[in-house]
Amino acid sequence: MQLLNSQDVSDHLKQAKRINRKGEHVFREGEEADAFYVVRSGSIKSYLVTEDGEEQVLGFYLPGDVFGLDTTEDQLRMSSAITLETTSLCRFPHAYLADKAQGSNLLRITAEQMQRDHNLVLMLARKDADGRIASFLDDLASRYWSRGYSASAFLLSMSRQDIGCYLGLAVETVSRTLTRFQECGVLQVNRREVEILDHDTLRKIAGIRVEASPGSCKVAGVGSA
Amino acid sequence: MQLLNSQDVSDHLKQAKRINRKGEHVFREGEEADAFYVVRSGSIKSYLVTEDGEEQVLGFYLPGDVFGLDTTEDQLRMSSAITLETTSLCRFPHAYLADKAQGSNLLRITAEQMQRDHNLVLMLARKDADGRIASFLDDLASRYWSRGYSASAFLLSMSRQDIGCYLGLAVETVSRTLTRFQECGVLQVNRREVEILDHDTLRKIAGIRVEASPGSCKVAGVGSA
DNA sequence: CGCTGAATTGACGGCTCTCAATGTCGGTGG
DNA sequence: CCACCGACATTGAGAGCCGTCAATTCAGCG
Image (cartoon, rainbow over all chains, first blue to last red):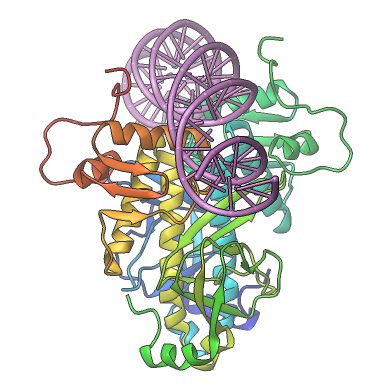
């Protein structure tokens, strides 16, 4: 999806490029917000801190993704953004949107964000651990695929902790589930390396309809079998 | 919060008013979207249907709330909206935003929606049933309060089923939790009627910091005590 | 080579879902 | 006026999933 005009992007790349190393904040919750960002390379974690000091991950952004549009009415950051690895960003002032009277364009950009949020809500409210992990991996795969990378093998840029904070699961549950998926032959995992072996089954577990399929192959009893 | 210019709203009220009776759809997922709405009176449930035919409630909208901004990039509805009671709406064409070059205005409007989504994600990911119900009631109370109604006593316009679909809980859990809150003296419930007796404790259960407070009064063991 | 933090694995308990029955309110028709 | 009915709500019992606690392994690094 082309969020912004290519020429516009090119213009800005020349002046608004930014390189951040792993673990650096792009912005923090509460700061003044006068710009949004597009990921050029690397990856970003968006999160907020609950009142009891715990972290809730809102999303991960890959190259091409837009983030930083979620601001309060006072133009303050509603969430924090931190790099998960060495990351190159492109900065766009909010004024940029007003200048070009891109009201409808803005709607298109925010649409993706809302779609993401809805998907997350849906996962958290209606899916169990297996479904959430499977959905998460399938989503990552399709996003890598749409960017020209392999949808079967990729490196996770986020920790198990981050995945858990994103999916509302304990780290141990994330780890256990991945192991079980591996034992089931759905995928191969080694630390941050993931290879999806049976994409159909993965999508089935995720609760996504797949064409041909024999019986329900829900990953169960594999550990004891 | 003044989402739209008062004069503009007045202009539109004259021509774009709409009355819907209980259970009528304002729009459905997938339909063409060329307008958003403001609730004048009554209440709206926003929801989407999962692949397995189940419903996921995304939010409830009270008088003054804006809804219908979540559209795909193709300007199609990303969710459905249905009235929970006899409801009066005001319709605003999307073109209305573009015409006035209200890019930044649009940002402010969508901000509220995103804030809402973030809160929902946070509840679903990090709070147990007690925390979700308490947060839900506290949110409703504060929204009624900001509209000039009582924050202590109000009528729920949604069913237990709807509340469960919103909070990712089974209907039985919603019912049980409300009963337990009542036994604990936090509130009084009878069907759709709710009266909050101890707002501080409610907020404490919701995971919201409250000034003075003795020991943790988490509602537990009340049923058996 | 030892240290540190991340990841894995196991045991256990509790919260919440599911299944099922009962209770309650509002509407309908005799 | 009252009996009946259906939708919604409440309540109970049992089981399963997942979080917590704890120990262990592993990779990276000085």
